[in-house]
Length: 394
Ligand SMILES: *Cc1c(COP(=O)(O)O)cnc(C)c1O
Image 1 (tube, helix red, strand yellow):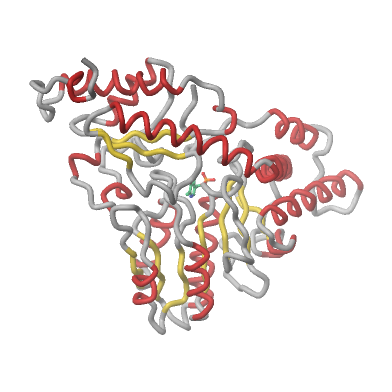
Image 2: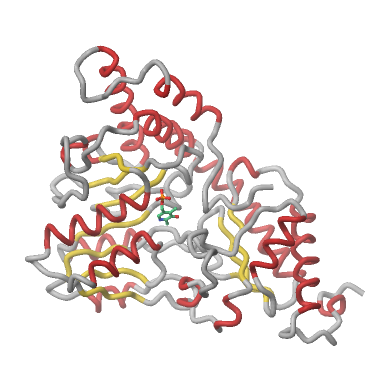
């Protein structure tokens, strides 16, 4: 049972089918004029239209990149370098993905000033904090749509409205929400938006950035002038074709999948909180992605829990795939104001449409057994407490 779909997803067979011709006979360079190149160009533009349609953008507002990280870098550095004469202040949240956070750290080393808005216990920024943080020097607000670790959703429509009222550009990292909840660049007042293919059952190494018509930025990669000069380099045609198909599939079934997944999500949350003592949900109960759950269990270590669950056939994670190699406490969970000891006992479960049919009771029982086993060994857990009594199982 693969339950780590916030880290990456399995490529769908329909997506792979569409890609294959562009890895074989349709190998032409989309920038050339003869027929084999024309086919590639056509496929590229069809994929661009599909991505544009799925976020209510126009085709020429979509630029293909190598993924979410590049799109985040391009949006933030591109705007910062373009507008630095106007001001050097950027507003973000405390729980951004490293692709945003580290880019901002880099800009700080170049004398940009960054305000990190707190997210409080529920993992969501407050609009009043945002309003207060704005200065005449502010050139960009970059706040993610859905968080990759805890799954909380930020009020991006309101953020976008405030950005627009103050004539500040608004970028959002929508890598986790694209194809899962509504993303509409017009309605949500978005100027720049990052998406990635491999989080929605597409291939890895491809993504896109939406750049609202009229927004100017400095490119990161200079060269032959592909992608309207904003991102040079011969396009990853097969990857882009796959991304276009994956976006179309995800967005055409968005409501159906969201409904199905949020039902499973809610059942798991309810059952875990009901049966396992000292278990908590990280992040807001309702303002969250339909497919992401993040629990916290007192007195255990998330890494050990992941291993026990893996042995029982469930692949889960502690949160961010990017920080699991370092033993550092998750900055996202720390930002919720949790006790540093509690931060280590986290478990992220991220579902995908294809993880549909599985026995939720069996899964919850597997978590309960594993947590109990770890607590028996934990010096932080009071072993005199009778677990069965606590959960009301005589
Ligand atoms: C995965 C992820 C990224 C990075 O996307 P890549 O395509 O892997 O570079 C950026 N932001 C968020 C929120 C993500 O979940």
